[in-house]
Image 1 (cartoon, rainbow, N blue to C red):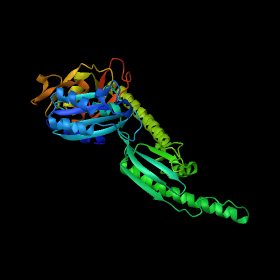
Image 2: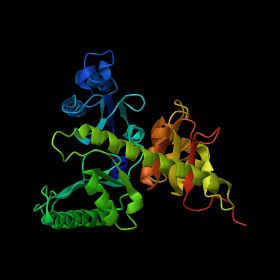
Image 3: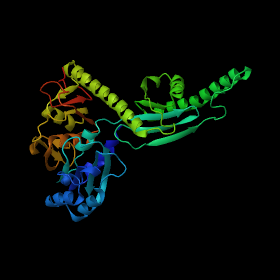
Image 4: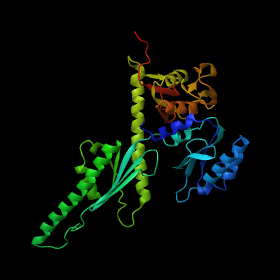
Length: 376
């Protein structure tokens, strides 16, 4: 399992009821018309109306609060059960879809996948001529999962400003120091990529140092580099500009990865082995057999009124109760929610795509682990 979201799969195996909250917690919207999505007492009132237990209401009220120190807009995603906050995610940016305030038999993780459409590790390296800072992050979150400071040599780090016979010698020595320092940074970036499987390397910092680091990266890592023109290691630098450029680089890679999935869908659905299917019933059937590798969902086109049955055990999902294959039905929930749940429980990857990205007339599709074509 490569996605950090898959660690939540075990939650689906526990009995509810579950409280799910996805709300705009921007400090500027507390007194707006959308207060039900923000104010803890209004959210709790709605959960209470739906039958939430007192312990759950207390946990939600304590957790739902404006995010201080983050620029608006900002959202929050909570999942609560038995008075315990199982998931608490602060999500920079506006809501990606409607807010959620619900009590149900299973937690609804669709807001997370809509808000964070991909999940892969990447490396951010802020470099200078005397070392650098390397962070391991994931596309699904802002918090660093690992961080390393590299302190290089500082003697003669600036070129000798004088003239005469000694200037060239000092400049050559300075260039050697720079190269040794940036070589250390490049070695650690190579190591971080090898250990994490990072799909992207964002290089920021001093322009000259960035170039030296890129030159010294391994041939396998160089194609992953996205160079950004932000030097946060300089006095008076703006970290917000770096964050914006990192988000842009990550977004561009997400778009390329999604395009690759769509190309695979076209090839595999029309190929002789038929390792792709589309439509609710074929995708549900693939999930029931743990045959689906990736589930592709149009974020808007899937009928909001459509529902599927969630089950307490394998095969986890059904079109209707008669299709439960011996498991107990927990209830009917929105189709997208049931599909995400079944995908995580069968080690598949759910991906929400922009409206119209899938072929005409297709709302949902799946790339398969083995052929759907009949034998013979």
